[in-house]
Image 1 (tube, rainbow, N blue to C red):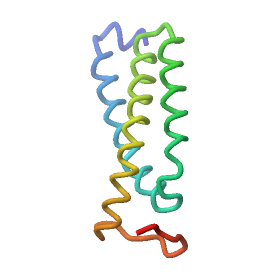
Image 2: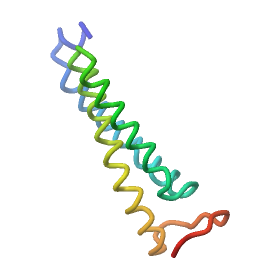
Image 3: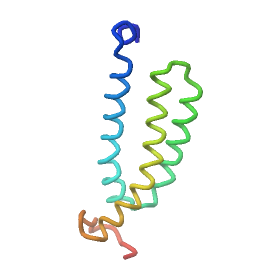
Amino acid sequence: MIFLNDYHLVGLFIGICTFLIIGLFHPIVIKCEYYWGTRCWWCFLLLGLLGIAVSIWVDDVVWSSLSGVFAFSSFWTIKELFDQEKRVRKGWFPKNPNRTYNF
């Protein structure tokens, strides 16, 4: 952290990590919907609440910011799970042949 502060790279570091966190959640949404459907939305709710708690608990601005980004990316994933189900229904993504669908 001292290196990042000395060279004024904290904002860049937070931006890169935010990009990576958001990018990581895209394939997670696809895989979770494929294997479990929308039933796993509550896991992302718990992850989001945990991320908020960590963000409040941690003193360092960088780690607090990144846990906040993680928390709200988890909350956004809940919406994306239900949107992914709609995309599967439209045929834009493959159905899991081992699952039964309500549509």
